[in-house]
Amino acid sequence: MPVSEKILSIMEKSSWIRKMFEEGAALKARLGAGNVFDFTLGNPSMSPPPAVERGLIKLAAESSPGIHSYMPNAGLAYVREKIASHLKAVTGLSFTLNHVIMTVGAAGGLNVAIKALVDPGGEIIITAPYFPEYLFYAGNHQAVCRIVETDNNFNLDLDRIESAIRSKTRIVLLNSPNNPTGAVYPEETLRKLGEILSR
Image (cartoon, rainbow, N blue to C red; front, side, top):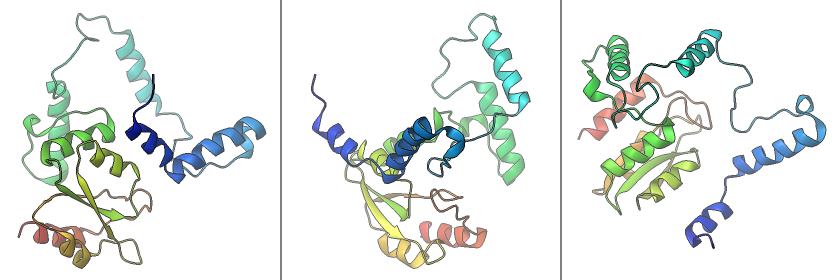
């Protein structure tokens, strides 16, 4: 069965980071893992903390009825409540479980958020450098990406962001620490961005 033109195009545009990762895997196979330093995808080189491993083993062995069955679409209520409590403690804002929706990783969460917020043709502002997969997440929902350069220190250029905002802008997509630069956006910069976005 032939693969769709869209998927073929995506595969041809595979990010250079992914290509470097694949080349690194080939080098490890040929030269031995201890002889290759891989700075591509950020895969952890350490095992999870022992408490996490024990918790996962305990859950996998659990035999209570329904423990491994489907759950509500938003996730298990007790997990969402714990996350809401943590967010409330950290931010001082009043979060409840109804503010929390569980997803399968960040990619799943971003795809759900884009689908919920952007109609086809709607725009997403993405600051560069950016994680290359963002373009594919936007493409999944026919969103248009507007790429905005950061400053020379990889901090947000608020003037450029403000200039890029149009009537079709639905999302300003940020992550901090930034992937791939590692830049952490200062609180004051984020506060000013919030003021721009609330106009």
